[in-house]
Image (tube, rainbow, N blue to C red):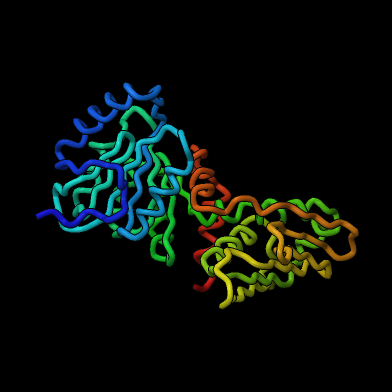
Length: 307
């Protein structure tokens, strides 16, 4: 007997046997053309994760609007050919045995178009195997250390990233702009201390890894990550002692913007934090195609920072 389909996932879909998925796609697409102008499909997005994390992922992809993707949503279980739920552009497969994941993805993906895997949870062995089918592999789990370790061996096989990297984009850009200031740039080689306040330690480790891999980091410089119990934000404040020049980047209280300052300088940089919704973050990552060498270097360095 098939494992139970996930309540609330693709509520407008139709349940079909696994072997009839493509026929269902064709039938629904044909019916859809009668009602509206069909959209061109541009890519396949494969989302792998536990049931509770597939629903928000499906909703986020739906919020992106007419992006032209086929979404394949898979949760692991024990079934070889579980029942699937199909809409005209998405399919949800609940309880698929991990050893069949590659075969299922290979059968359902649009083979002539790019494929992105959005990894929201699953077995590490399956994570490594599916890299062969992914043009881009986006990690997105709560406790990523074991996954990050496995990812280090995949750099040459697919374009890897972590959704936290997208959430840190404005923080990285804002700090980089402060290093355009001559006194800050000169002080980088004399770095003494970096303090990161965070509601999500893996995000802080990744940001710290980016700093360590991007700056002339002295061996004597210290990195201090301070966990906030009152927040789940990726970062709250970043402070650097650059040879006597104090650099600070923090969220402005009550406002959705970052404020960056540097002592011995009259310069103040204020930038909006942007949209940090799940839909916006995954949309940003799906727009990327090539390897991100800055991320790869940051991940290697982040792995050396204590959990």
